[in-house]
Length: 343
Image 1 (cartoon, rainbow, N blue to C red):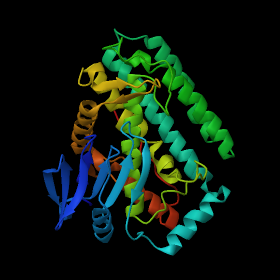
Image 2: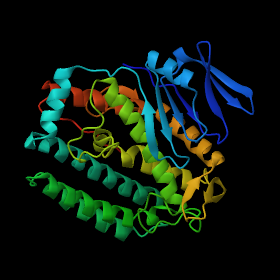
Image 3: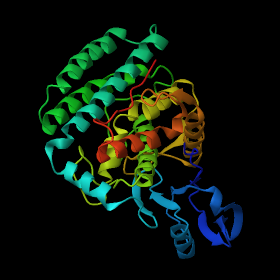
Image 4: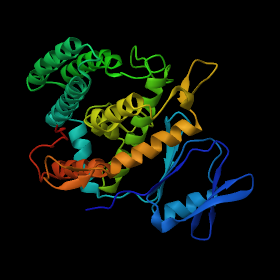
């Protein structure tokens, strides 16, 4: 099993990455803050606009080290990568599936898992905060989800599945504010908004979704799958459609639960955000550091994977799912087994 990725996150607004021998160095005000031997790193994520030296980009590509660039609020901009992994037969089959109805069952499975896992988050909220929330509202949404889960298998086209997914997402996020039981004046949730996020909770979710998308992209490329050609999300220049397909089943488990935990336990506060003149809300340096610290801690927790029945760290879930997708595309598995939450 692959070791958990060792990723360097650069969040300082005025820091710069460069190369010194076989090391990646962080420079600020012409001084070296830290250095990291390249062989210990699996990826670099930059959340600023200062940049990376051309020498380091070349060095990273030669050593198959992925560098991804994000805006400070976590929106993906682009990446630098060396030779593409994988074989042509795998990718040809992926493109064939993307252009045909043969991928319908895959889409059914990921949407089923997304809705199933969202249901688990609602049930957990009732169990943990029954006296503080409107349980009837959440139970009504759970009943709605139960019906949707049955209808997924009846859907005979992707547009029908998009409609089911959209309706459930609307009902699920209508309950999100109810699951916030602490700091309610600062972390209210009216609706899901992005590009840009307009409140603290949406800013937190968007940042976490970007982190998950990045890690899924890396996992897919690591097993030879084209992260830009998906089966559910349509092709669009610059959009990693397959990564977006694959994170659908993981959003609730890896992002929503952590966001709610950080808010309800006062791990993150309103002081960790800033509002721009445009109305956009984003995490500040301190806020991003808090999220990344807790994101990394969460990835170290161990679970028993429901399909492979092995104990793994949560951070390896994207890699296990990418491996299972690889086997499905190759024909080694009859169907793609999505990740389904337990407990």
